[in-house]
Amino acid sequence: MSTSSPLLSTWRGWIALAAIVAVPLLYSGFYLGAFWNPYGHMRNMTAAVVNHDGLGGSRVVRQLRHVSRITLVSRAGALDRLSRGAVSAVITIPAGYSAAMQAGQVRPLTFTVDAANNYLQDLLWTRQIQAIEWRMAEHDGTLGLHRAGQGGRSLEQAARKESRGLAQMRAESATLAKDAAGAAAEVQGLARTNPGLSTLAAKVSSLAHGMAQLSTGITSAQGGSQKIQQGSAKLAAGLSGPVPARAFGRVITLHPVASYGQGLAPYFLSLSLWVGSLVATVVIPGGAKKGLGQRQRVSLGLGLAQSMVLGAGILLLLPLTLSHGWAFFATLALTAGSWWAVIRLLTEKLGDAGRVIAIALLVIQLAGSGGTYPMVLSSGFFHAIHPWLPMTWAVNLLRYSLSSGLGPAAMDNTLRLAGLLAGCWLLTRFVPGHARFETPPLEPS
Image (cartoon, rainbow, N blue to C red; front, side, top):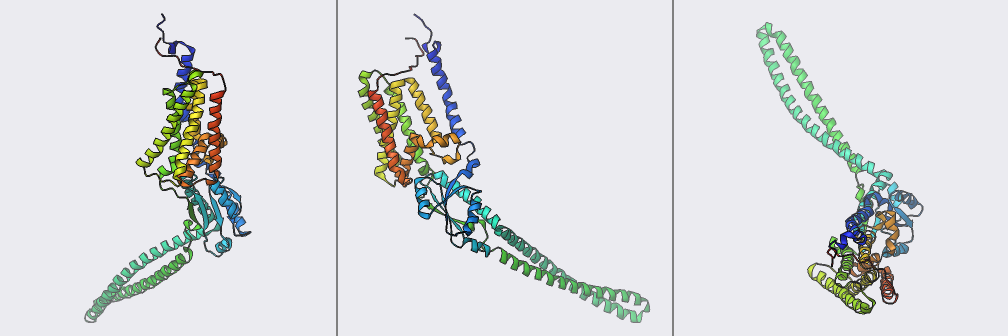
């Protein structure tokens, strides 16, 4: 009897080992590749612009196009697109915006975001709004005025400091002038009795006169410094009014999300159920047609139990809040059923190879479902496949149940997951044949 390892001595064994070796690279390569430089794609952030300023707002629109991908729509149309996730923000240009800017006033733009659509998208738009504000400030010149106002304040402070120094010098020079005048009077008195001191008396009198002139000059310089101080204060007050860049925009957040964990919960809940269904195939692997019905019933029951334990447990362990409690548990059950149907189909028809494909599908969906970064910040490949990934539907449906995000798409996502479940179940149950690839054991039988 042969003692060689079937796993190490057959081509099937080496294919299985190669697939296992490639799994970490598959995970890191796909995920890092999808979001290698998200900030480099910030200009792809989409926004709907509502222009209430008529022709004057067209100039603002031209500036916005340098920062984001924008679409001009009505107010109702903009909010509808935001609720469906078609755009990531709504920018509203108020009436009279251009006229106010020309008058040296700042009337803020309004930025409306929906945190329930994507938690990180809300945070990223805060950064994007700052870029828009600075661009508008630079374009309208008010930022330059703001900096000039800051310069005026610096000049005022320097003039005030100089004035204090001159005041001290004036006091000291006045004292010296007084002392010099007293000394000159004494020397002149001595010169009357001693003619040899007349030259010294003349020089001391000249010194006293010079000190008096110095005191007068310092007093004049102090007056000039005070005028500079007053003028620079007026300059600073006139130029640094409502000019800070933050004054260019105010943010309205729809469906605010309280924490990072709440925002990323849809992603990790969906991921957890996929992993749970995959682990279940270790206990209940594929097999002969005869026992298929029992395997399906037991594995489906196991998946539904996982979903209920996950939902109840996460609510007990973490401060997760629900906008629609019934929808939360129904979505978990539907997601678990859909993942069960997909992974059971792969396992029954392809055996161990089906498990590897299930892992590959998981990795692709982790990068392409939009559960973390918005997909507009990813590479073109993942942006293209994003709408067709089942985990995208599950994540968006969970966002609705948790935070009321993407409400208009809830029914569509529900029907897609239900269709996936039914389709994979029918293929598994009624389509005959299989091409199972079973990994040889390490030890010979």
